[in-house]
Image (cartoon, rainbow, N blue to C red; front, side, top):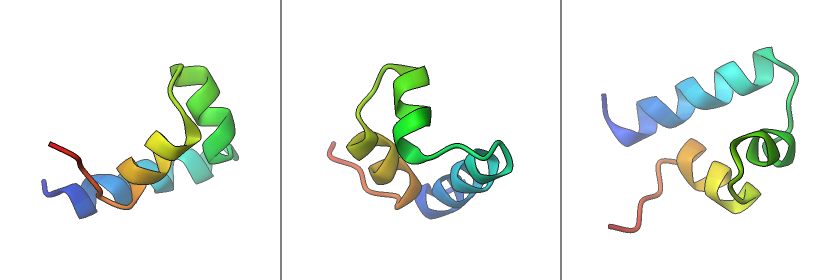
Length: 45
């Protein structure tokens, strides 16, 4: 899977659970910015 597909998949799952990026970030102990980057396929390697 490429980063774009993974991001779309994560967003779909998050929306199915009716979670905001902020709520998911809190549950995963990461920043909402990180969740946004994941969903948009942005990586800083």
